[in-house]
Figure 1 (cartoon, rainbow, N blue to C red):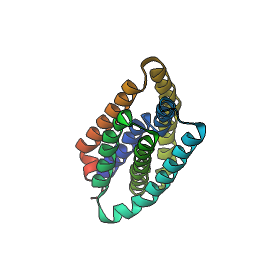
Figure 2: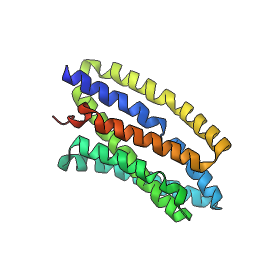
Figure 3: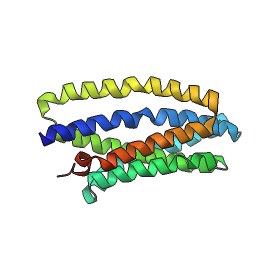
Figure 4: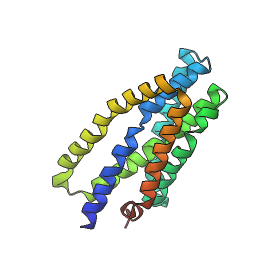
Length: 188
């Protein structure tokens, strides 16, 4: 069944996507900000504007989907995040870290909103509760693991290797989504 396969593809990609979720990137950004001698207020402003960017990204997703396919938007968001992530290492000041972070946080909800709405459209109403429960169990149970692993890696290896690991993970997710025929044909 094509609908079942497409729904599994959309349910399977997000848990990988959330392994390098915004909480891990937030932790990395705090460490980067401390290296740049940012105050607590400056870090708070950095995350305030990143949060605004996230809200704008979630509002932009349906508008973008009116003009572009799920595949184009999703793949563009995934690859752009993978390419933006290593730029955090090169950011010379807090303003650049904030700009890169805002762009990343703008892109996070775009894919999330699109895949959730696509999943809701594909899955019969009678199965919505079960599918969403399993999805949330997988996704949200991975968040503490992701945070602990990010903290452990930051403590033992520093920001550069951790940023590169997350960028590599995002690139693998983008590549797997790009090659996934069910995501490519999600709008059919």
